[in-house]
Length: 448
Image 1 (cartoon, rainbow, N blue to C red):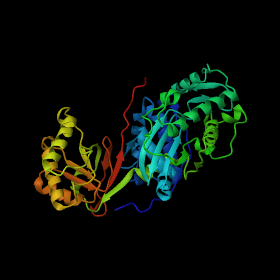
Image 2 (cartoon, helix red, strand yellow):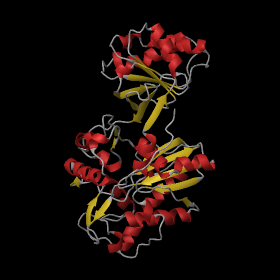
Image 3 (cartoon, one colour):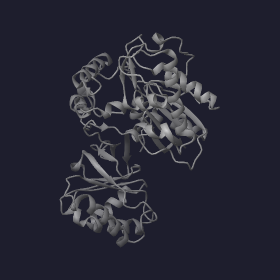
Image 4 (cartoon, rainbow, N blue to C red):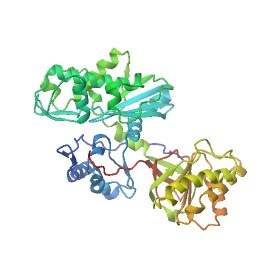
């Protein structure tokens, strides 16, 4: 089963995230914005069956990010998703911009760089699938100014590193020149360029990285730019005055221009994406909801289930013998549940059995049952997510071995990794299909 088509029925206006004094999100104001957009779209929140609340980039760093979830959860239906994390954001943006699709259709390795307010998320795609991700602390809101003015109102910590590198002793309240704005933007653009060209970075770019750099075992053939700054990359904008640069109260326009100029100077032709500023949210609609069926085995009374921790106990492939499956599985489950006595539900992620014969699948089922013996004493369900198309037979084998004594969910044709979280929705289409959302969770963070 696959989702055959998706249709965008409404596009909201673009809103700046309401943040008080650069620290706290105004959750009530966020809720009001969403309520207004729902009314303009002609949609009642009770009509929404499934949806996602996605907190990304600079917003996810704020002290009260969790309050947004509480204020907006009612707008996303019964199947609420709270999603964030720079790696996932890179994937969402690359799917929404069209980079993933472009890589598949043109047989190219494509890097999508989503340049937002505080971060630039890099997703690399090959054959339509994610190859690599990274993130660097560069964005249009790192320095804020009075609109149409040269007076600085805010300097983020990553921007201070850039100013120090340029020997520019600027502070909040100072006036900034056009030449200085151009210098800063070019330095930012050069750091972004370095993430996809040098990769083994030193100096400023290395200090600005939020993640490990991109791997060096592949070559990037095409580059796209998405995000709030991207519209200034692909038009003919040129920084002619300070007031023109700061018309939005940030340095986004000049940063877009600098990226265009810097990449052109390096001989890199930028491919224009299908989506720019909306790439991440479009990507969320494409990426986050998947379908598992019709060869699945589920106890429908168990579902829906949310915030299931994914473990991947067989990184080198599923062993041939049940005793080896049980040993590896028991070791990892023990670390997460028995030692810490956590309350989390676990999902076992695996690609495929040793081979696709019934004997091999049955051997795998025996190994899973033995490896989960201690876990089952906690009265938890067994949840298996398998990429291969054999969820039903694996689930039937497990059900026979366990004699139907435990809740069991076995779904297939879904790709998840160690450290992901998943939600599994109620079965649809007569129980033959379940919706699955792959995500990482947002937790409230304390500011440093």
